[in-house]
Length: 315
Length: 262
Image (cartoon, rainbow over the protein chains, first blue to last red):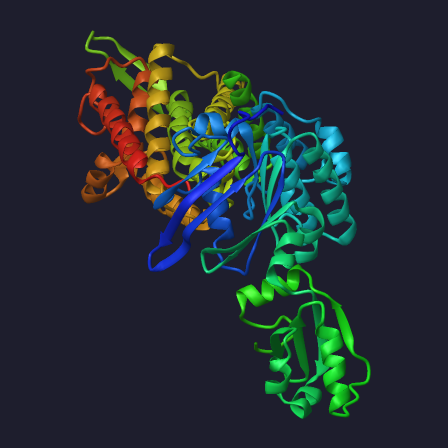
């Protein structure tokens, strides 16, 4: 793994815009990725995550704005950039009749330095797949082979587009542990995922995109802190109906309320649980068990994206 | 480093080709089977060749079967097998995958071409050995000229195949198109049987087909004809060579314009 110039971020995206026909895939996105960080892009389908990554990989040309990879333009400086990056695409990318070992050996030969195929296979649990043709592998095995192909060239920066989709929990754990070890060696990691708990646990910086725009960026803890949310309380919908939504919203600690057909979610600061308990007590309402937990990335995500409640209801 | 990468890629592509039994059957087994079948059935039919010296030299159909077969093998590889590989690269995002690696793009064209050349050579070598052992076939031409003729045929058909499938994203579509183009050419070129048996209109169509030119080019040069000698098309041999070279040039230019990596 080589070294990036000390004065440049690993990635710099400035006012990136990419349009497909009438659809604005990425709209004025700007952000930087520090060297040696684990950077995660989250957002709903169609948010512009993959397009942003593909512009950084040089697979797509921005309509306006600029992207820089280790200070280089990934389209015009392709010859240099491809030696610095490792890429895992969402698509297949490997002939179905090619054996996993052949693919890994071929890709290893493309780079000036490469990781040991045997070691990499062992770390990612690929040993039993190596002698099989790619087309005969399961979805999870294919995904792991693709991850290994992205890493085998020992890149300075690796782009992983939804790498853990379809992986079982053990494979996901092994993948993240291995990735963190590579990160400790200095590898910059850019990943997209729909698994918010993974993003929270393993990534240094989160970039939240929605409808092509950057909605929020920062370390997960900071995003939560800056949101002003400290806790989420779950109430039966009947309680909301009895108390009245206006009274609930009037509580100074309540920041946001969402409800489904059966349930009401109340988001607020550190006083929200106490204020709610007092209010219910004043009104002589016993909610039974009051379920509360600290706010997390998922709450930030849904409040920022603001569409459909993943548990079935509308905001 | 590039030479090593190209060698590795060619090796990988060769392994993939060997895992495709249909392609191996069509380019190795079928030409040999047809060679043997025609050799045993009409191989003894005489072909008198008069070079204008007053001496008529007598050859047999079996002597030119190999040269003719190699013409349609190059066409089959160029129009059917090579596009399968290139379209598969597109269909499975393999072109895209390699574009984000240090693999030079040209290698993705060169490697399948090299594998095709190896398969055609293997087919030729097999027919040569079997033909020599079984039929005692004669070769009266210049080996370098014949090699040049086979090369230009291969390039022309490969360029044609790549150009017509430059935007096709499904191997099935490419296969359908390839078969639709190949079999009429195969029948009308003379490779399937004497062109004289067809009505004049079909013979005229055949005159314009690249496989007819490749077939005549190969067989006439195999028997030692000079570049000025007239073929069954009624034109000097060099015209067939120029026709195939022009086809290769046009298809390379068109293919380069039309070609889509995605």
